[in-house]
Every structure is written in structure tokens, then in C-alpha cells.
Length: 290
Image (cartoon, rainbow, N blue to C red):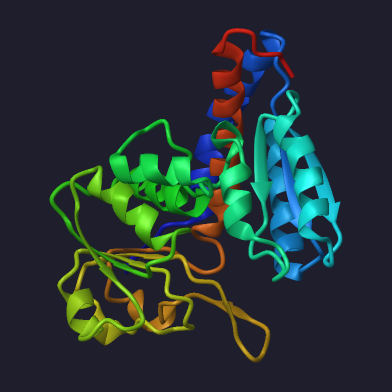
């Protein structure tokens, strides 16, 4: 029987440390503050927003919501974004993506202050991740996988890892984080030939391809570790991951469920980023305290 790597357990273990960090900042006169910027009201965004607000409340971090209309122009968006970006009371910014087609996301990525970029969208933070610079803010989902591996004692050094997915949100940055812990990483994607063979060679598999139940039991080696980052909605409205969980779990040593796995840790990582940003800002000469 495999061990379920449950996100709630990891988040609970992180909670006390995060609260202590927030209390230390409060004692120094710093009020950590996150602003979530949401364009429109997509249900996925609203669901994550609710979870993020709840997590910030549990830790004691101020959480502001900037809701912008779906049809906002680039100029109007930039005006609103710049005010938040330059606000000395705001330590961290989370911008929900994807954005509407009329907005130039590449320009916005260039605009965001890397020191306030809590989800690794700035080219500066992404470059730092690829350089192995630990001052980077990595995308929260990628870092959540690393926290889960660490919590459950999964050793990465020297291990053969297959990451399925090449996005800048999960696949690529997570591969760099794992490489930084001396794993041997193979990045696969939707056009990889012999994907099943690449998976069977792996001791650790991370699935982030966005295809429901795509990774089946015959593609996974006995005793492997599986982290499922995928979130897919089936026709009956139920959620499932990229891994065929029911059939795979009898074969592997550790596996994350969906829901209840990686997603539960991302908001805790977000909180840790806000606290780090507030702490860094506190130590900078001339920085105004929030």
C-alpha cells in the first residue's frame, strides 16, 4: 500500500513556523501584506482566491483583493498595476493568469517588481531559478512539490526524475529546483516519443501535463514516487489529476492525491514568499515599513 502524500499535512507543518515569522515581523513594526490582482471573475481564480485569503488569515498576513473588469484596456490595467507595484505597504503581488487577450502579459511580466513577484512571473526571478540563485521567488506550485518531497523524506540526490510538462509555471522551474538538489532530471511533454519508457525509467515522476488520468499504471515502475500536479474536471464534475490514481497507487511507494495534494500546499508557499518579501524589505536601507 502506498503512502498518500497529503498536502494538508505539509501545510499544517508549515503553519507554526509561518506564524512565528509573522509575529517577529509584527514585533518589528512590519505588517506583511499581499495584494491579489484578478481580472474578471473566472471560477478557478475565485476558488484559488478564497483559499489564499483563508491561508493568509490563518497566518495573520493582510490580504487585499484588486478586482479589475474583464474588458479593461492595457493602459487602464497598467495604471492600476503600477499603483499596487509602487505601494510601499504592499510586500507581495499575485496576478492571476491567464489574462484576457487584449492585455500584453509579456509587458506586465517586465513591469512587476521582482521583489514583490510572489509567483515567479518576472524574468528576473525566472533567470535566478535557472542560475540556481536561492533568492528567487519560484512559482508557488513548483516550490510546493519540493516542500512535499522534503516533508515526506523523499531523497532527490542522484535520483532519476521524470517531469512531464514544460510550462514556466511547473515543468521548467521545478526541473531546475530538483536539479539544484542533484537529481538527474528528464523533461517530457505532449510530443515526447516513448513517454511510457521515459516514465518507467524514473524513480520519481511529476505529472503536470494537463490531461486527465493520462499517466497509467503500466507507465510507472514498481515503488516509484509520484507527484500529481494536474487538476482536471471530468464530465460528471469531479476532479482528477494527470495520473490514474486508483490503479497507480497500488504500485508506487508514495503518491499525491487530487484533490488534496500539491494544491493544498501552494497557498502556504505563497504565504512564505510574502513573509520573506516583508523581511527583505525591512532590511533594506530606507525601506518604509508596512
